Length: 142
Image (cartoon, rainbow, N blue to C red; front, side, top):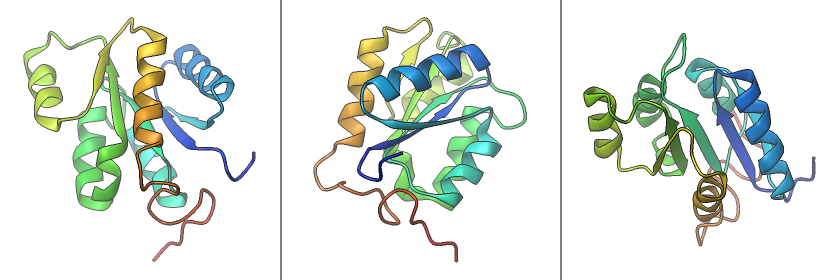
């Protein structure tokens, strides 16, 4: 994939939903990588930087809530790049988390164009030509 494309990480346990969103992002000019859960997402972020992260909330192994909390500790510079998607905004604990996170979120089934617009805003924020850690593919482990 071209190194000048904006990189988006898709964190979604549903394989069809993950692949569909990856394809849509590619059609919109993004480089996208899909992973199944929050643990895989943390590994992916350690391996390379991303311009945006689209994350489901209810997933096995490590939920979106747990992922975000660990991200706050491990890579706080990435928390402003997260957009959540969920079918559970009516659940009191999830609703409270989404509000407290301060991150944009979309209820499933979401309007694809609204989600893409949010990803574009995050990925193209002024001053973020490259995500923290340098251009995609150049992350250094310490």
